[in-house]
Amino acid sequence: GEDVEQSLFLSVREGDSSVINCTYTDSSSTYLYWYKQEPGAGLQLLTYIFSNMDMKQDQRLTVLLNKKDKHLSLRIADTQTGDSAIYFCAEGSNYGGATNKLIFGTGTLLAVQP
Amino acid sequence: DVKVTQSSRYLVKRTGEKVFLECVQDMDHENMFWYRQDPGLGLRLIYFSYDVKMKEKGDIPEGYSVSREKKERFSLILESASTNQTSMYLCASRGNTGELFFGEGSRLTVL
Image (cartoon, rainbow over all chains, first blue to last red; front, side, top):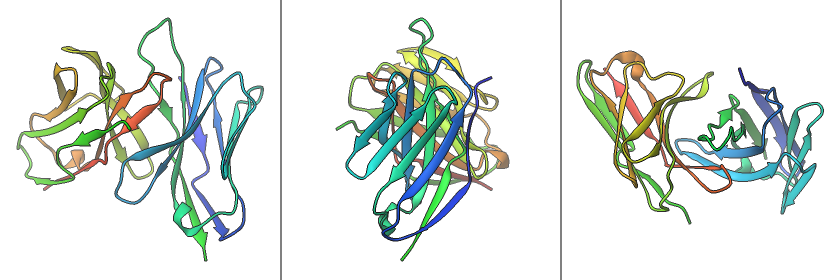
């Protein structure tokens, strides 16, 4: 079945760039998403990329997609302490119009050191 | 902005009790989902619904049921709560480009 994998933990210093990586197995993925979860809260959609794109930039966030290697990354420039959270990668596909079920990775805990 | 509201942020129940978790969305979305989140296991799909009165099992439906009587409301029911159902429960509705919008979560503790 489909699988999404992420590393469990990343520690960076404030002001540095953070790069969170994700690999997925479903070659028919249509959309790929990044979510952020702060302690005790639900998941907040940060950004998404369609599978026919290589890169998407949104302010401090840059998403890179290598479809050949099924590899997705999220780069956060000038990382701040407020960026400390768990980041989830998710992939989704449309199968003939059936409901799109997102498959989530287990999340990467980003710790930003002041 | 899409708003997904879960009725209870924190609940404490006893083993064997019936538990209702309610979720309401205000964007007229057709698809709604219930996940549970546990440390080290990520998000696991319990049930989803693609229309009123329609439901489908997710990956871990055992011990749960759902109700979708109105488009905006999707309820998760634990008929007889057990300690292994202690978890964070997340409701979501699906937008037009497939993204999910989540509620704030309901943390359930079963004693």
